[in-house]
Image (cartoon, rainbow, N blue to C red; front, side, top):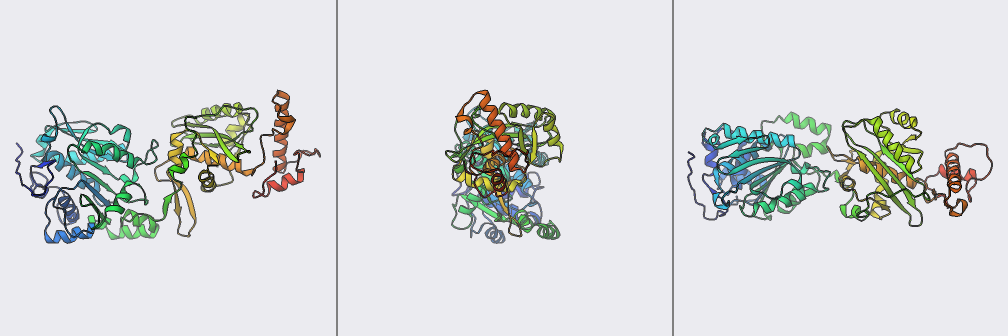
Length: 542
């Protein structure tokens, strides 16, 4: 039988009734007294006690001001707790103790209708990390001789309690979080939530769970190491940290050693020597200034043709192709086909294919070669993945594979003005949009910018679109469709003539002369073609 001692608070929120204060629970060995013990956990005890609306001691109040920039604790249970905490600062263990307190020692019965169960939800970047949090919570219950009596069952993702509360852990996916009644929601490492189904998963996930807290008045708790200056963690921190913030939203910030003094200073020092910008975020809890968003979602969406997922082959057009090969175990193998609309000076994406791992690379090459031949393409460009392997595999099936001369970061740099000026038409492909919006611009110590996906994310679809755009831009206005051959005729003879003329012009531009002195282009001499090919900044007239 759990002892419940009611401690009335004059300004406490009526949504939940605390059977015991968090301070008393942390002091009682039969409850949570074996958790967060000793001086190394003082910062966490101070922050959690204040967040639950309980008064602090004078020395705790000094520490509270250092962490939050506020002179006094709220003295009423907050609606949102946001912690910007350095790595190895004890975040997962601390929030598991708070989740145990809210689920096991706070009375939610008046807010649940008969037959309804409340959910204390913990969301983590991936399922493995979510499972770690549930293991911490389970261990906290089992170490208490009183709280362990509340456990009804434990499954892989849920700890079911006898008081009609379930503690559930989920990976970050907004589509699976609507519906339940939440007594608390813990967002673990929300700055690192990644999803190929959303370009801003943190915003959409938190918007999905907030209505579930409305009837119980339970807290939303975001605890994370900082990353770039974007997303919900940054937005709430920027708006509410310090004395001018919303009193119902408590924001704290602290370095790893502030919340975990047992972490050796030498670990922090070595990290700062290796990469100061990264270490200041990881261990000093500072948002990174060297990482910015590459492109806005509004700009990308303006280039998307809604409801169009693929364009069929048109014999009047001349197509280009770019691939991003993969070994079949980690990344996707992607293909992009497109062409230029010279009248509108716009690049058109006609096809975007992706094969997700696991797969046989040889089988994917065979499939992509069939697609390329459907679009009358006999040459494809790709990155320098795996040395000669892509060249050999594509050549076996009659497709010439050319490694891209430009690095990926340069491809993205050249894509940006096309997106911002809406001079590229994208297909309605959610993953492509999300990968483009997830790209990051980083500034190295020497001041050089690089563009790449975030840690743990992917950019296979974005890479081939950027590569295709680079190929299309290489001709700078030259009509590679060859519609000027044979008065735009579309019979087999005209198509063969266009293809022969195209191959000859491209050969001349590569410096390959077949001895034929006749002029390949209707305007430019063969020598001019070669000269324009060596001068990418010059546009070849139509």
